[in-house]
Image: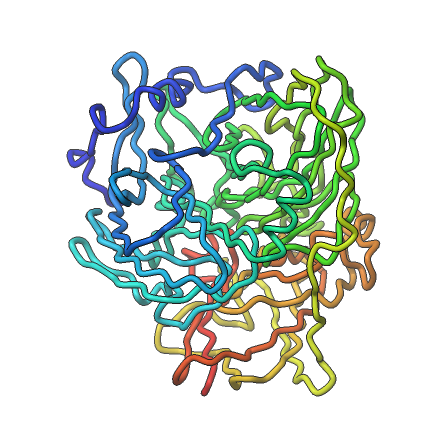
Length: 521
């Protein structure tokens, strides 16, 4: 990361004292796997860091390097988007908008390296999407002006700076983008959900911290090839956090904001997984709730879930846990060797707790889950062209159909207002890749030749798990597996539109496991 550390913007006067307390954990970073979950979970609220912002006016986002003030006079370097709206200051605001709302946001780059914002999951013209070739240099500005056409759901925004995405996202340049429509409003009313109280955005990340409590991002060559893993697990930037809950229903908007780590998430009480319901994936609410006890969540993916604590008693404790799984890195030939060459103390696929929920009060009468959440219309693939997409490695580089990223090349070209079926095949001797498409959502049609740990969850037809249902923009493809997607390239934007298709393991993305996708008018 080419950042001038003399230019730290220390907000000792500008950040509320509560923030210093919230981030004081960096003095003595807790080791992953600790059972001492005694740090209050940071829950987004009003202004300040990750405050909920409902835009009424045009905004200016300044990307800059700052430092949170810590107890004992220490500071933690952190990249953020700073903005102000109607007299309130925000850092990395959680944007909350309505379907059909127009947004005007100017990005000002106060870093001493390039940057750009990608609106992850949104259906936008190519010039509004945050393509890496639109990266702006220090002192430059980029103007976004678009209408949110997506259905309600949990989206996010983050840096997509060319060759700098991994380091900048790791350092903080990301936040939630929540869209509300009639279905979302109806769900909140039916279940008496309140954002920040019983409806909790929760970003899960893994970091490495030094003795001073600073994020450490120094991947070695193997980590650049396989992905950078941390050994301290954070939920909303809190290690070993706890949250107090009542005996009622809670919504968790789960976002995997890690660079490379995959999670297998379960709610566990006394060693026993509790049932919970998946109600939404990347592109918003599903047609109905689907009961599960575990689900994979890959980098870039979102999972909206409901946990019913109504049957619990005051004093009970529930852990959000990532269960053990086989990461299948390198297939049978190289599996294990790659993990041993990482400097992370917490290997991929290890079991650990993310956070603790403490039941501290009785709540009101239970509310039944709605039988219907939204309407999902299947994409009509009757006359769809089939596109084969192969993922493999050659000469120590990850490739998509034999290609790596070139700004002036368009390996994928499609026609506007057409439907395609993509067959994404991952090589046997590979690793799991979370493949992300810009500009368009898709539907997962099927999984074939999946590993046993994936097949056991694929009970919703054609090998699909609950996390594959509805609308998606990121899909995890395991070694040896073929995943079929339906993509509708209908849009009403003027002219050709250029996006990218890439792996959302951010070290892979920065190593050019990415190709241009041009949608011809």
